[in-house]
Image (cartoon, rainbow, N blue to C red; front, side, top):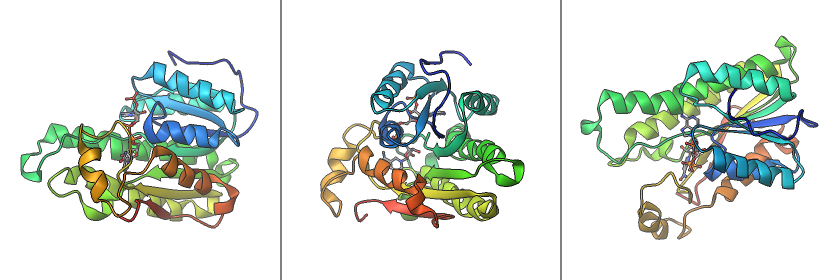
Length: 253
Ligand code: NAP
């Protein structure tokens, strides 16, 4: 694969693979896991930001790598996992890469908008989860592991007037968590979801955080680190009986 940022040759500990780890919740998750895991972050275009996340993980004691992968491109997902196989043993996958479309009403959506959104948020999440299962399932000789799917509180409240299609894509992610969790529960794999509320990252249109934050029950948006803390717990042995379910990190919304 091109553009790999590598100083470490192989992992010393189980690897946590985080898609979309160049910024936002993915980058915070990489830093939260670095004390206990070796880390692979992926990015689509932001190679420089991903390299900085890798440097931060190494400073926390992890072996770490940044690898390019557009999760919407089926031809890039399996090569990503093949490269991770060369680095070490996969123990956790955080299905984090995701996009939001511009605000709009359902009556105004076109097919191109829907295809791109679903290709990243749904098809990408399924392809990544499937590749993880093929490696981690004990029935296939794997050592088990954890898959964390990033959903959204939007899956519950539907985002009327903003992006119902995004909310629907995250409801599909919730179904992936529930269904796959049951499918692989006896294969040593836990599948869990996280539904963040409004979180301070670059994903939002300008002004949205400032407009909506004060009206939330806690009077503020959440931070990427507050979501990463839940993910760190979910991948840890402390959550060993938690599967096929999702945790809300929504500040009461
Ligand atoms: P963000 O700051 O916009 O970061 C998105 C990350 O995903 C970036 O690393 C980006 O990489 C990557 N990415 C985007 N499209 C990709 C693709 N096709 N293939 C691979 N990587 C891709 O977003 P965030 O706020 O941290 O959100 C992370 C996840 O949490 C998403 O699934 C989002 O839907 C969910 N979420 C966020 C919020 C919130 O309020 N922030 C709330 C609920 C749920 P590049 O920089 O290289 O493009």
